[in-house]
Amino acid sequence: MSTAHIASLPTAELHLHIEGTLEPEMVFELAERNSVALPFESVEDLREAYQFTSLQSFLDLYYDCMAVLQTRDDFRILGERYLTRAYDQGVRHAEIFFDAQAHTARGVPAEDVLDGLLDALNAGARRGITGGLILSFLRDRPVEEALETLESLAHRAGDLLGVGLDSAEVGYPPELFTPVFARAKELGLHSVAHAGEEGPAAYVWEALDLLGAERIDHGIRSLEDPELVERLRRDRVPLTVCPLSNVKLAVIPSLAEHPIMDLLDQGIMVTVNSDDPAYFGGYLGDNMAGLVDAFPALEPALERLARNSVDASFGSSARKAELH
Ligand code: ES4
Ligand code: ZN
Image (cartoon, rainbow, N blue to C red; front, side, top):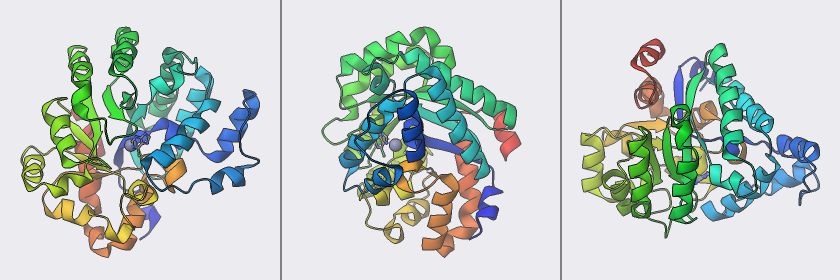
């Protein structure tokens, strides 16, 4: 499958953690600039650590590496580099998660993170890639902390697209975050949530019914529950599926065993996304190319997947029309 063909399809990236775009070279560059000591000798040394056995084994390294991100300008550079790479692979709209709590816990003000990422998005918009920011709560930290984080940015709600829920899933059901998502709704924000990645289909139900999630991030375990499949299909709830992530985190044994064809056959609104591309082996176009290699029958459906991503975005109808 030619990557040029894939890059010619305008897509929206809907499941992307900006901290997961921190390439090993940039970890070293920012560690030097910000005088942060790293437990790795070299870029190669760090890259060799990218062997994960579960979501948690990845999260441990992910949170360690992001300690090099300290200033508004660091976040601007991170965002600009991501948007440039994504654009080169066909992405024309990006709805980007940021983990505010992972930065405030290290003494970096949430508004510096927000402002740096907005600087990047403004530069991106001038170059033809639009987008927005999704404040994602860490579900393995206290609910009160998520509420405080949301309140601390409530006066900037106009600069946010929505809220999300991420980090270690099993044992942290969406239900816990019902008051946080209710407050986000009062602030006029969109809602999405990670569910059904490592956790059960029951978490997808909770994300829909208790949090009011408009999209489900991952959601692949929904296939274990036929009633849930029917609900997702009927309501056209988008799933933001991340194939390379699923393989790298051992959620699925190999791309050839990925359930994307089942999800499509069941009539679910599937989108393809990159999650943490610096860690998982590729950006959005790389995920598409990997899928087509594993499933040649998917090639005619690429245009549908690209269109789904635009339709499932929170972009304006004018922007969607431009990208169709
Ligand atoms: C994540 Cl793959 C994944 N799952 C849950 N939370 C995350 N945060 C960053 N990547
Ligand atoms: Zn994710």
